[in-house]
Image (cartoon, protein in one colour):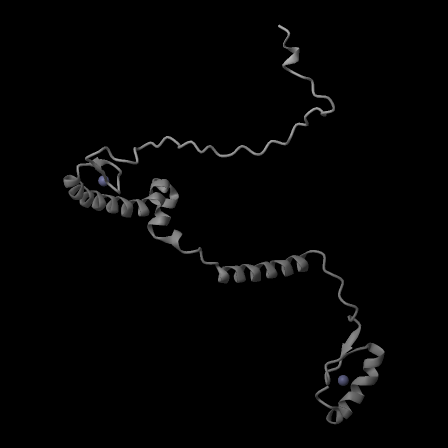
Length: 172
Ligand SMILES: [Zn+2]
Ligand SMILES: [Zn+2]
């Protein structure tokens, strides 16, 4: 053997640090195509379906192919929703074209419901524990100006108010 000579030891070189590997590049290798992109010699491929035809037949085929594909496409554009909802409740809904428009918000119903809720709340409040009335039960409303006064004040105010009503500024 004696091969130690051919491999001289290099001193002073630190052990190679593992460099962060660059992210794997996308493979440049051509992906296998399901269909040969190039038609065999003497043939041309239909742009629509990709099948190969002799040039003199291709023209005829493409006309037919385009027509049938156009039909297919048209039909398919309309179908998916129907296909998915076939036999479901949504089918009727979609048949009416309702899925095309956003469901209108029942504003009137909401308002009515709110009103009913409001009334119900009041009824509940009335039948149940009544909220303590604001402390004006012993307040007297002045028939002249509509203001409320404590009994003692009202007794003094009301006759006064009645006499000076004409002097009172209506707007304040
Ligand atoms: Zn075709
Ligand atoms: Zn008054």
